[in-house]
Structure formats: C-alpha cells, structure tokens
Amino acid sequence: DTEVTQTPKHLVMGMTNKKSLKCEQHMGHRAMYWYKQKAKKPPELMFVYSYEKLSINESVPSRFSPECPNSSLLNLHLHALQPEDSALYLCASSQDRIQETQYFGPGTRLLVL
Amino acid sequence: SQQGEEDPQALSIQEGENATMNCSYKTSINNLQWYRQNSGRGLVHLILIRSNEREKHSGRLRVTLDTSKKSSSLLITASRAADTASYFCATDAKGGSEKLVFGKGTKLTVNP
Image (cartoon, rainbow over all chains, first blue to last red):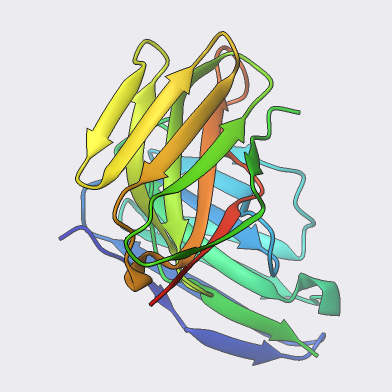
C-alpha cells in the first residue's frame, strides 16, 4: 500500500470555527509532513514529524496546531483561521528522512470565509 | 534562498513531441527530485537523482543533473495528453535545514 489518505477532501469554515484535517499512511514511514499550497504556487513546508516528534515548525502561526497521535496518523487542528489561510493542504510521508522520496496525499481544499 | 527555479513557467506542445523543463538552484544539494501535480491534486514523485549522479532514466523520463551549474533538466519523450500537469523540482540543501524546497514549477500542456 503506497497510499496517503487525507480527509476531508473539501472544507469550508468560518473564522471562529475549529476543525481538523486528518492524514493517514500505512507504509511504515516514520517521517510525515504538512504542506500548504496556494493556487499556482509550489507547496510550502509547514511542519515535519520525525518518529512522531515535531522536528520542524516553519514559523507557522499558532492557529495551526499539528498532532501526531501515532506513527500512521497526522492531524492538523485549525482554529480562528483567516481568509488568507484558504489553500490546498497536503500531507506527505517518507521512509524516515526528509531528503527521501515523499508520498503525497490528494490534499484538503480549505476555504475560510 | 535554496528554491529551485523552473523554466519555462509554461510549455504547450503537441502529443508525440518531447518536452524539456529546466530547474536551477542556488546551494549544494544532497538530492534533486522531480514531482508531477495534476490540477488541484497531490504531488506524485517521478524521479530522484543524487548529487553524485549525472543522468537517470525512468520510462519516458530522462533527468540530468549538472552540479557545477546547479541545474537539472527533465525530458519527457513522446508526450501524451495525460502528461498535462505541473512539474516541480525539489531540492534539499547539503548541510542545511532538513527540508525539501520546491521550485515554482512548469505548467505543461500536451494538446491531443
């Protein structure tokens, strides 16, 4: 199984809502990532988890809160987002190092109203 | 910035033609990777080339790496309409922060 799954596929939320994005992989990968991608731009790294520990936070605002409950799951908790946070949020995983091939999920398309 | 810069930004060709995309980067790297992204979807890994490699093939894909010029090229031969997508190079800095940085991408359109 070389698949990374993400739920939901689409999400519309107000600025006062709390929601969560979920990501799952069953490839035994020990590194997992959250990226944000705006239209016609490349993905930008937000967070890296390595062996279930947060290893990189790219100065992401605290309204984004990542969580790695176990080696297969990655969550991104959203609270008090701004309209400019509307984007495609991509989850990815790799064997255990960020320099390796990364496997991406299909993404969650987020719209903040 | 380590970010790769692809050129051209957009490329439109006819089915059966070859497509060449280029990527330039600024710092020494461990690896360079190429990814494809169909509209609004996740990225798909195409090929990884290590800094000590000069050329790599995978099916209709050919990637070259010139570390002296800090550049790479991706050649897609005998293109198909299904190759229509955005193509990104991604690099990791040798001795730098542990992250993959994506270039701005090339939007390829293959017309049937």
